Image (cartoon, rainbow, N blue to C red; front, side, top):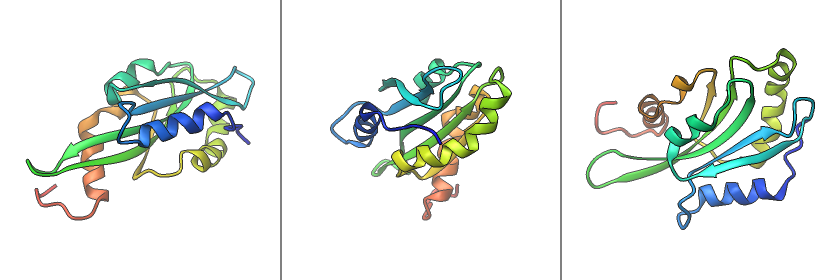
Length: 144
């Protein structure tokens, strides 16, 4: 089991979800290489682009991101994604535990429209993710 009990994780989650906060992403990393405790390592307001800069190739991490997109000039949508990051330099035992720990993370980062498994920073480019969000969102009037 992953320990996601730190109160700052819940507060950061609420900040990302809040319309009154500029914070639109949070990043959870393991406390150390042997620990199963996740800690909040950073938050930001620069979206996926900023988050991508924070991801480390040696780590396995979890992120929660608010993405805003428009279907047309009149409407804006905000959706949330849960990212499971496994960097190319991540140790084998950590990789093996990620699938089990994801269930524990989902107990805290509860509401999201799309789960994005990422192994490369290119997996977190915004345009392809928005396409997936549109498809998952139901009614699409722009043919996507």
